[in-house]
Image 1: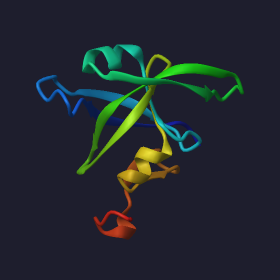
Image 2 (image 1 turned 45 degrees about the vertical axis):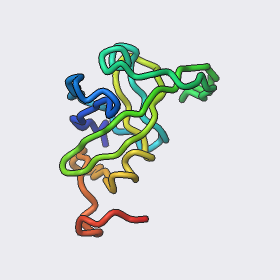
Image 3 (image 1 turned 90 degrees about the vertical axis):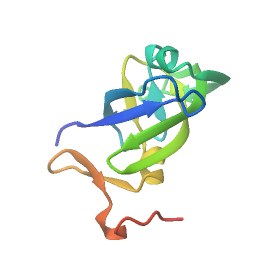
Length: 123
């Protein structure tokens, strides 16, 4: 089993005049949140709301900016969420995946719509 990536569209819903960014994001079922790079934050002009402590995979705690809102579009789904600014790329965690009712197919390393719900969002 390898890593799963998905091309997602990120945008700033407060500034629709800013062009959305399509990015190849790492899909991480072991992470909760959306994490973006500082360059994405700057490009989308995302406002810093807070600085929060987060625990990295290596068990180190760091204080990082929390920004938003961010709109995520994937296939015919979308959600609005905050993001942590850390790292060089983009990491899609389980909270935005659940919000869009997406599931990971580990065998073919794809992020897909949850067909069990036939297009309905779970509440």
